[in-house]
Image: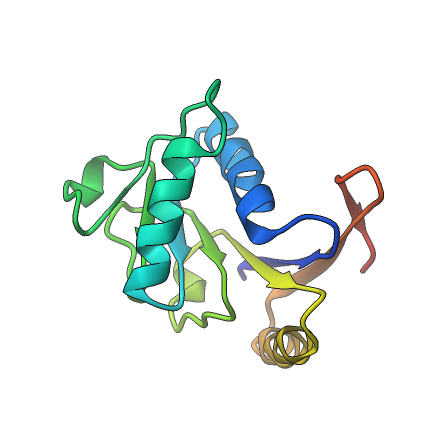
Length: 149
C-alpha cells in the first residue's frame, strides 16, 4: 500500500514548506507530482519554485512548459502522473483517485485554517479505510517536523 504522510503546517506557510519537501524528494532521486486546486494555483507555485531561494534551483514544469516526461517535479491541477513520479504532493485540500500509483503521498494542509484541518481529518479517515500506511507530522518550533502518529 501507499505510504501517506500528513504534514500539519503551523509555523510556516505552504510556500515556505513545499520547496523544502521537494528538495528532499530530489535528494533521494525521486520524481514528484504536485497536485494543486486550480490552474491559477499551479501558476503561482510554478513562479514560487523559480524564486523561493536565489541560491537554489528546483527543476520543475507544468502544462504551459511542456515536456512532462522530462520534469522531475510536475505541477498540475489535474489528477495525473505524466512524469512517472513515485511521490505525490497534494496541496490546497486536493484529492487524488490515483494514490495507489505512488509509493509516497505527502498531504500538506494549513493548521491555522479550521476548515483545512477538518478536511484533512476526513482525508485521513478515507486513507485509513483504504488501508494506506499513515503518518502525521507536525511542525516544531525550529521549523522542522515531529512525527506525532
